[in-house]
Length: 192
Image (cartoon, rainbow, N blue to C red; front, top):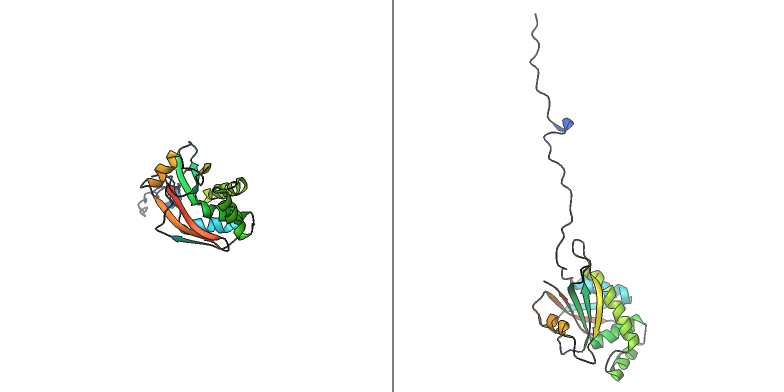
């Protein structure tokens, strides 16, 4: 008489799906705030928009409420102000002129004569500020879009712009140079 082998317990391995942890799904991390872009991102957006060499360096010179500037205010989908890009008015004129392919001195001369940006240059810098939203839109953060543009080159900026420029929010102060056109200060501020 032969003895039957002792039955082994059923295998609980991979074949039956037991004993294995369920695979983790990668869920993008969603933040409630817009992150501050790197200087390189700002340079890349400007360079690709203007199709010119652009230099960007961190600087101590910040755009202040007393600086004549053009400022773009960015909002999220709930219309909350989440970021601001403020460009010194002389640099804004140079960037707008580079976008319109004006002769390098012509944009500066138009700005100097008027004391404020002419309508055509203001429209061009509005387009550049709209495209600048690409540097503020990152995966996992709220969608950001340009809401409005303030031109304080001829007058004092609105109160909300003044408060942001004087705040201790995360900021990036840059000296931006557009090859053949000139340079000036740009400040990027995001809501905390």
